[in-house]
Image (cartoon, rainbow, N blue to C red; front, side, top):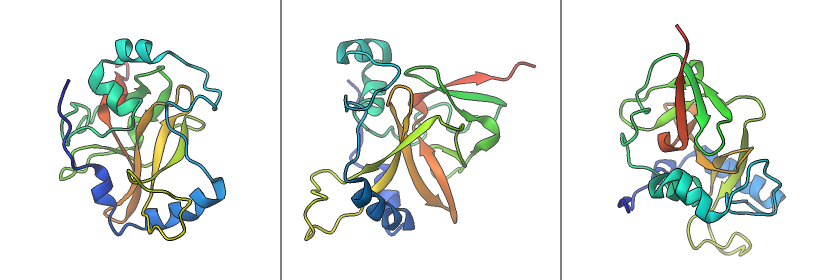
Length: 179
């Protein structure tokens, strides 16, 4: 099983306005969901064993457990060709290459937005945080999930003054446009 570093994109979030915006939304929603949450009626469902076999351990850890890949570990992070990015878990078109921007010093995939009705948003609380404890000062981030299978894609961040979706390349398959 591959090793994943202790640092995550959550570190990029320190001081970000996204975290401030996410906290009231989380309180109003009163709960975040994870890809393993079986209360949401996803169109595509599989057992844990089926997900592990289909995705492999590295993609499973990111897509089903909310992990983060290492910077520049995906060959898609600096892909600039025309085409579409589909969810590796269910093949739903999530992004078009026109919405992708390469940010050299970050090393993940960044998109300005996704396909209409392709993503669900959730609140990603820091590990060990209890959002119901009013005394607990937490910073949460907004995470993106495939709306068809619930797979974790990445997070929203403010990068260079723009609100962008920072996505794990391992969660996507790239389909080049036909010439």
